[in-house]
Length: 239
Image (cartoon, rainbow, N blue to C red):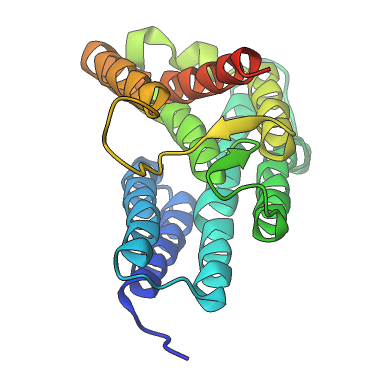
């Protein structure tokens, strides 16, 4: 059994970067967390690409990938929302004790629990070969990281709006549901680079680039919403 091939090494880079994100979140360097998430996302994308390129598809790699994703795309987004909830509650005009703030921030880790459920389900669901059923954990993490970036950059003055605890609780429930929902979502596995058969992928890429140019950091979460909308639209059309 080959432990250290290129796909597995990329998966370990994903995990290592996720671990660093946890360290930064706990050491009051939350501004470094998005960089770690970016490294994890890139490594996660290319480990699958590398496995297909060198025609290596092992059970070990599949399990390792899920274990890494639980940290990078399960624990890390939970910590991000926990940090945001904690700050929101401390800024509340009502006075809360530290224990009350801790308990009120704990629901953020529903994201971690549902990410673990989604990853376990993915490993045994034979329907998810060419697409996804439910929102993939990297997409959920992108959405959360996008909100963090808007808060840190105060994009369009949205920081105070996004620190709303009720909005954050709604986001937790929304993403948790989507990760395990029976909702088909298209993947980015190109069998060819022709327009035919890849129309929705190319449409998503074009619209995402437009959003990034126009809105910069504020576009990250909107791109995930765009992906969800296009997936739902495609499902309706294919009925």
